[in-house]
Image (cartoon, rainbow, N blue to C red; front, side, top):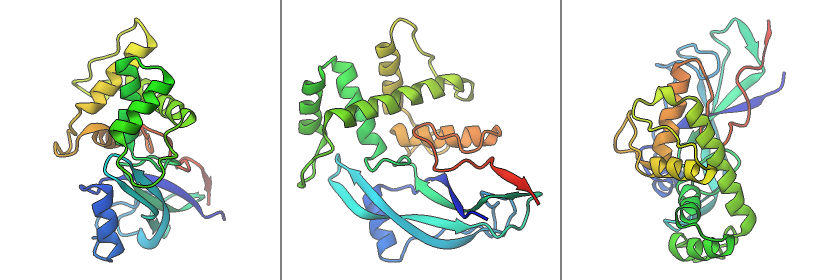
Amino acid sequence: MEKLLIQIYYQTNTDLANYYGIFSKGKWNIPNYWDKPCEICGAVGCATYHGFYTRHAVDPMTGFSVNDFPVMRFLCNRVGYKFKSVHRTFSLLPSELIPFRKLSLEYMMQSVLIRVKRKLSLFKSLDAISNELCFLSLDIAFVHESALLDHVDIMTLAANRLWKFSELFSEFPGFPSDSDNQILLQFLEYCQNYRSARDESIRGPPGLAWDYYNLNKNHGRFGAFLFGRPSQKRVRSIRI
């Protein structure tokens, strides 16, 4: 049986640097799945802590950059399902990050907003991003054309996803239909001003990503990431 991994959005209620510092000292409060459902099989008291893996994480806006950012893993002990999932473990990805990208979600959103809102050329956008969003002493090699275009694609896909399930958000304004740039701008401004309905202290795109994930999960759409996609899908299963 393959031991594949799925990702779950995780709210740390702090920033990446603080989470990293507390976890590195061994003082982070590891989630307890003995009193809540396992993310794979749904049984209470099933999932157990299974260590962590590390990845790059960079937030240019705060000057945070590490190559050993910890992402917690949990093991499903196959307590409560009728179908044997190919997944054995799941990881808890902080909502300030997205799958397969090292840069913070807030930075990606702000970089695209600079270009779209000011209607800048690609090269002028890069200059503005470098001057206004990057506070790292190291070489900011991630400020380049392909990175910015990748961020634009991520935000455009997210705008389309949010529009598709806009009924989940009672105050969602809807998108104008006159141009793609206007649709993207309205989405970015919505992200920028968003406060989580679950916790108003969580703001911006991480708050929207967190609410989107949970609202879709409550409506039977497991693993619905607004930005990016989890590494595996839960739906793959075989009968025992």
